[in-house]
Length: 142
Image (tube, helix red, strand yellow):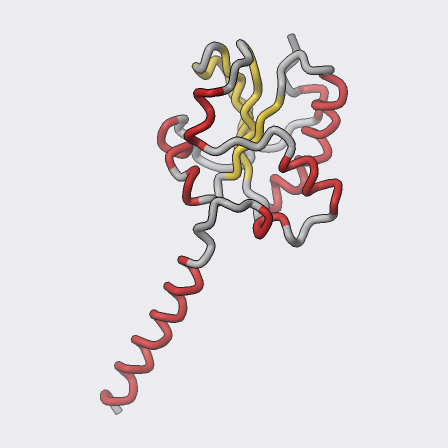
């Protein structure tokens, strides 16, 4: 029995590790494949990778940390879209997909404990944050 059980466990673990490791591409298309076209367009507009945050030229901006698999992020998307439409660029909105391996450092650098998290940034430093879902009218206003 042990001769069969041990190889079976090894095969199952190998399959799980292979499946988990296959999502490490910098291409975000695979993460948005289950979303409709308007949601894809929203997430991909002004999307940045972790190593590109310092290259943002805006003095003040919002950094929206999300995951396309997160049900709360999906529920929050209409609110953040409404905010983006109403804000008229006052605080430009940049999005970072926390699911990408390339963005793993965002969790530690900004102390992100869960998504969605919206950071108000000024000159590259966080000055305020919203954790979780809030109505569009409660998102940062100048």
